[in-house]
Image (cartoon, rainbow, N blue to C red; front, side, top):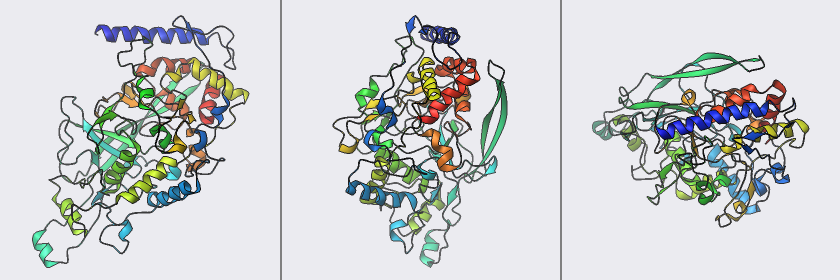
Length: 500
């Protein structure tokens, strides 16, 4: 263990001990009966601010809807019209070309799903794929290097497994002669299994976690390269992304502390990723490892990688050079390989839909139980990664998103989350144990809006409590402090997270 690692280990250990000692001074409702100290510093619980009830400022939903798929309240009529126009491209399925539906063709040749909404049900997360041998829909299998010294993607499968493919019949004799490759097939199936991990809280209440294991089967084009690993992801919530895009980069970087210079055990790090339009390297904001620097690139990449729709940001098909049937299927589809399958105006409408997608108002924040949970949230130092609030950039080009007080509860930074959540895969500057802090706003409504609640990058956690229990690495002391809470305190903390 080097000096930096040793310093960090001691800081984290002391933090854990301090938290346990401090929480023992709290009464059963979670209120402080003695001054809570953290590393010889008082833990400050900020006064409740009324703006917390409108977490997205003017982009907060007018009321509680049965879906996340509504624009923010304080938008112009024109913006709402553009929003619903973009929603049509988000909702409607794409079809293989050539077709009579010229505005919707271009699907594939390889793809995960036919529409955005198939993976983002109600603007949230689609029903998670069942355990077993599956052709995944809501789960996406990313491929990445397990070796920091090798930055190349898989030479055959690229950076993502696409389990579905368009089929076609060659009726043109000349094309048959030119293209004998008619076996365009999906790349692989996924074998997903869960092991049950039992555990118990300090007060004796038991819990059970689901630990997933993943293996690709029926690989259509041969085995993966030796340096390639799997990173399985459940499509994330998409509401509020425009406001995350509107946070000033300087406000994010002010939180960066890669070497834990303040000794608090937290080492916020921002991914540095390419902007494919400008060619510059920028701070990553979107994706589970912050792979994309802005909302436009996030949407454009999803079109190409998930649906097989090429665009001006990602003009090349996802077929690799060895996937001859895929390449010929693309050519047979009626498009020149140089053509774009979604023009910029339709792509921009889809980005606008995502940008103006509102966030639900907070619920019952003033109740005694939720306020007790709010206090515990700060006492356990959850806010060190789940930063509660920002004021968005006053110069952001969409005025409705500019200078808004928002409460997303994320720093958008990468953190070491421990071996339990590790996928072992590198993604630019993110290593195999690092994940971007997920926003917490609105997640308590997933059961209400979709009939299912699943948390963490691959949806392994069925409850907020399970998600907390999977925290490790930098979050290990906070997790252990949560385990030490009594049931009334744990329930209060979870109710706060559900309410924001």
